[in-house]
Image 1 (tube, rainbow, N blue to C red):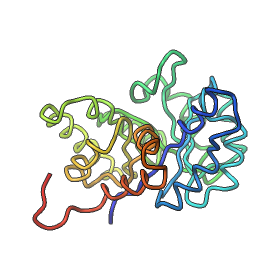
Image 2 (cartoon, one colour; image 1 turned 90 degrees about the vertical axis):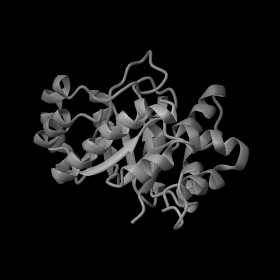
Image 3 (tube, rainbow, N blue to C red; image 1 turned 180 degrees about the vertical axis):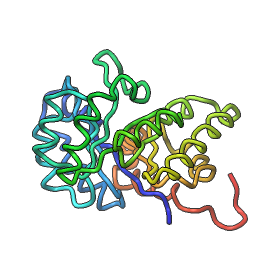
Image 4 (cartoon, one colour; image 1 turned 60 degrees about the horizontal axis):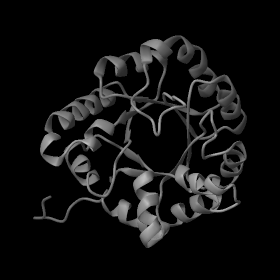
Length: 246
């Protein structure tokens, strides 16, 4: 089975917020992405509301036909909104107001007390809990102890490296993915992935069941349209034809 594709539509909202207009509409973007083959819609409701807004979350919960994955910090206000709207999945991520984008995996040692109190509340409401972590087996084991059902491996370091420098990081990701599987959790990956670097990861780490990708898809969409950009990314998740190698 091919890995699933979660399309992050945050940067549709970024364009809208840049001018304070009503367009482009994240709800329309989500529908278009699903029509083109997205298996999940991912959004990040940040504390500073730099792109996705509260109203977007509520509307998307009503309109998304696949799955809605809400990325979020361990902030009381955001937790309250998540429990109210009940996305299919919540992914806990670290967040700093000064950052341009998420800079790394969640510090699970620091967050353990909060997570142990919050995770049961989400599971009681049939919301799948995912943690965004570095490819570190100790952190993954702790996540399992805390009750996480899914781990999203942070692929930012892999994405930043040149193709000739990725071997060690791929090894780390592969080991992490195998460990997640051995603990009975789902393996997801994301951050910094694009049309150039995704195929290698798909080939080398078949344990990954789903990829969440946003910025590169929205950037590509500015040239070819969102539907085509999603279709092109989906094609990269398909097996290479016999006899073809990267």
